[in-house]
Length: 88
Length: 280
Length: 260
Image (cartoon, rainbow over all chains, first blue to last red; front, top):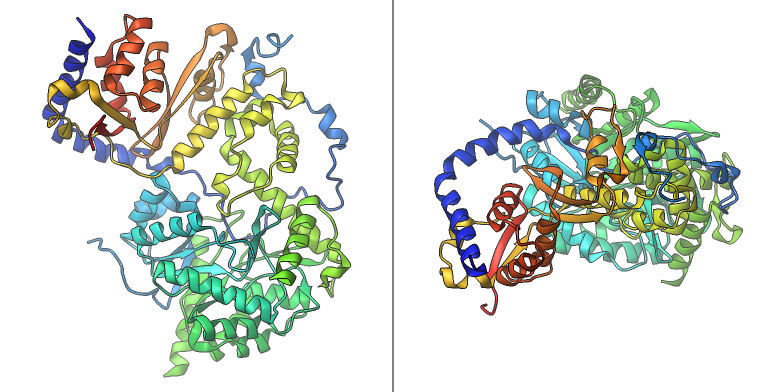
């Protein structure tokens, strides 16, 4: 099959799909809307002062915080094999 | 039958609607007078906007902006303003508000609500910016008084006088945040009663109530507690001098279950009803 | 506006650097020191940006742990100030930042995971746009199919990596089995980000599918993109690729090349 025929066939099958699935798709869509609604992520813009306890009062802003140098990733990266090996 | 609500905010208690309560509100449609959301969280499309449009079918919505920087001296962010315009066109909110603050200087944006000296220079600048925003949106903007942790010795007038003058020059309304005034009274010695008398009652279109926390002797506007008795008292004083207006409970951190928020809104509602009864 | 803009520039620098406000600023706090007020503003500044990054990069945070993530964001925030009044725009440079962030060098895949997270973040907030109207296609004569320029939805992104980043991302989603093990040698990833019914999804494309979509996204007409891919990947199935992308809401409007 040359490329032209491949394209004609592929678009042709899209058109077929469009003809048969019109109404069925509309119903599915409604159900998905209900089901997927709960995944809302909280917007980050708000008008209150930040509550986080890590007050930065008096803290140096230079990159000389000793904690920065001892920091080692300690999370789910442990479950990813080869993650540390590859760089060596 | 759900139908779009197009009129102004009802003069009742409302709540700040935040992500943890979207689902419950839409599933159960509790009795809420109205709701307010932060405008920027609904810029763009997808889940946030579609959620808000569904909420809008059942409740009057107020859009409360935090990022316009009305008092910034950098040029107004046109992309931000047109995003707000598109949101307004989609939501057709019952009210739209911003803060009397700035957020941009020296090539940076500070995503906070920052205070400035209340000078004649600032007054004409902010008035021009409010006019630009109102012109773009084609409607009145409510401007909220600020909670501030410092003030400026070279201010030429009080915040109340500044707001009063802004309403005169631009026709904007006032969103009177009672807790912000209380924070300023405690932190900065602002005369709360003088503020309430200085702002034109007819320009006040909405009240905010919220809770604060204390850090090193400074009241911080964290919106993470119930409204305190002193703020309720100040609200009652405002109701007497200004009159009843739609009143919002704001809670943004350690957000409690919906019934707690609704309970706070009911307390505001009781005071609004007493206020109406006295007027008759 | 000299006085007001100078005041604001001084104030902004003091907040960002965590400094006291200079005495010339005439800042007054009757009940506590000006430094206390400035600490509140500095804390707001850093806290808001940290929380914003944690919201945009939840997988990155889980991978490195909360403490490490805090060190990482602290340095990121020092390097990249915010440029928008909408916090959802903050954090675009994270993948590049991580690539150069010395303490994370051992996690060779982390930068690509961050790039995928940013694509998902943008997809979540992207503008709405109609997906491909198939009935509109039926009005195009078959001899012009090769000239079709298909646009992708604003929520569509593709992130290609030599590491299995789509598998890593999916393993960290709510509801996924937390008892997973991923071998970095399990292969490369052509992660496709799409949004269907307002839900952002990450799926895998084949090498051929990714090459084709990349070509389409750069504006190549259907004929040119397809021929290019078939030369390198004779097994590429255009039919399946189109149906899958249509189903995932990736395909949006189309135009015809050389026609208005």
